[in-house]
Length: 56
Image (cartoon, rainbow, N blue to C red; front, side):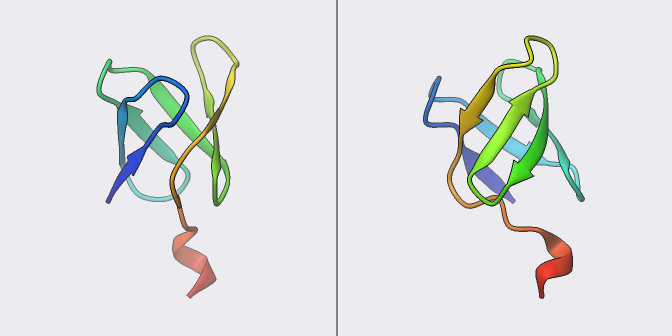
């Protein structure tokens, strides 16, 4: 699954669960359906629909 990061224009590729990596190689953690945290900087980013696999 690919997620668009509206804050910096990167694409996040989900590794399954709540962890993914953006196109710069930064680790991102899902905080909600439309929010992720950059694990390097601690900044919150608005993202396009990162749904939780367990919501189904």
